[in-house]
Length: 125
Image 1 (cartoon, helix red, strand yellow):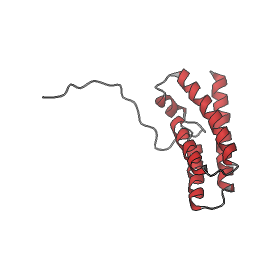
Image 2: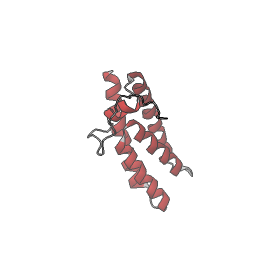
Image 3: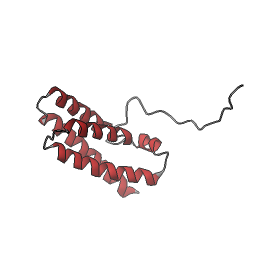
Image 4: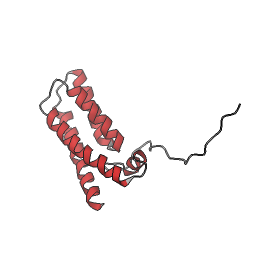
């Protein structure tokens, strides 16, 4: 017996190469199904979370790898791909047991740029 098929609205996949800004707002819009209220909420939460995590990571806690992994996932979810990439590099440095200072500085810079873009976006709304 054939299954009934529903017609669903087509939604494009994320780009293979994200846009040029610190936040891929097209990706964010897809992830929030175009709900501007949810976009603002997740941007606000990410801004606060990312700042807290980089401050915590500066002290190189025992759970630094898990915290970095959390930040990487959160960043990918909202389209902050530069933050996610920097977090992935820091995660690899931590796994190797190497000096984290350069990778942490790169992550801090990526987070700062993402937070600036978020602040600008929130004030436009």
